[in-house]
Amino acid sequence: MNMKRISGLIVLATLVAPTLAQAQNWADAYARGLTAFGARDYAGAKAAMAEAIALRPEDQSQPTTLPGSLTEPVKWRGGSPYSPNFATAYATYKLAQAAPEPNKAGLMTEAVTGFETLLAKNQGSDAAYYFLYQAYGELRRIDKQREIEAAMKQSGQLPWKVDTSYVTPEEASGIALATGAKSNKPNVVVAGAETTPGGRVATTQPEAATSTSRVPVIPTKYAFLIGNSESTDPNNKVAFAAANAQMIREALVQSAGYDEANTDMVLNGTSEAILAAAKALADRMPDDATIFIYFAGTGVNVGGKDYYAGIDVSGPTDTSKMVAKSAIYQIFLNKGAKIFAFNECNRPIKEGRYFGQEDPLVGRIAQSHATVPGGTVYGLVTSGREVGSFAKAMYDVLTEFRSNSVPIMEFGWQVFNSLRGASPGGVGGQSRQTPTLPGVFNMATDAKF
Image 1: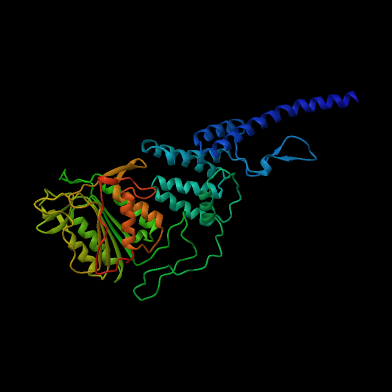
Image 2: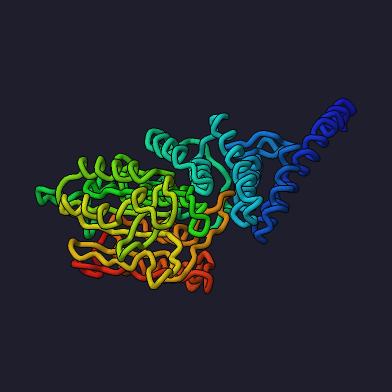
């Protein structure tokens, strides 16, 4: 063989060998990450992907051609994208989902940072948007979810591709539902939708209710939410009441077809503030609308009447700083509204009296209580904040239903099962707290809110 040619081959081999070795190193680390994902070892997957990033820092949307023959190029993993940074953010997201509450929010925030970094590099894949949306949902950042919704609607087909071979089948379906086939969706009539005051059935727009979109809004549905964490009565104080109201609002707007503009909230309000806010909302409502009322705080029964206590109340019998529950109901009944009321209050029995003992005499009303007479409401920590078990169960059921037409009694049973820990994903209240099923007055048990 010609010595010159031999020398050239030696030089070529000397140059190619380190490249092949480096490729082998990052490819091996990536493969270990995929194996860990397959075993649901997300900590191991995250560590392996970090090794791959150290050897080859940037994700690549296009196939990777391995060093070798120029006439017969070899594509790494059959032409798959190289996505260790996306995989690291995803592994962190999965770790956050399974983490105990003290660690959950920190890990989820880390996952958000990972996905946001990819978007900042113009690596905004369908999957990155989807998991960023889900992560913000876990952090209760509904404002950020709205931003992502808007960005996804404007983006059209996203060219950047990522390796999603390790996501769960359920997540793969969620990505396809949320980001696929953005056209060819006909206008549809919402099953069981309320009619407008003129009798016209409300219809949806082209978007279907997917796991990353809001449930279509019904314009005749309104909500009035009160969360009074402050109280001068230490025995009846509900410290997580304000957080509850915010969480319920989130579920109504995202998963139950309530317009944000039609959903009013009073946090730590006096009796005057509560009454004024109720009147202001009723003034905006059309006749024969639906109103969802939620109260968390101190509730008492004085002289046979139920009262919502303002934060300025001086004692458990100071009705001058309370709002009669029936007075709130009447404000909305004057507009012909159907009322669906939920109360998260302690219900001690004093001299035979307890909050919730007063039943409505007129109007179309359904009302539920977070605990039975004599019971106490309890909280739990989720995403770094304490919320009520009843509110969390309501949130979970609304999120699972994802409907703008929720049947009241079925909803009540599902909340009961969730709170008692009788269904998958229940919050585990179990024997500590037993909610009441809805008491339904002058409406059908399958009436919808």
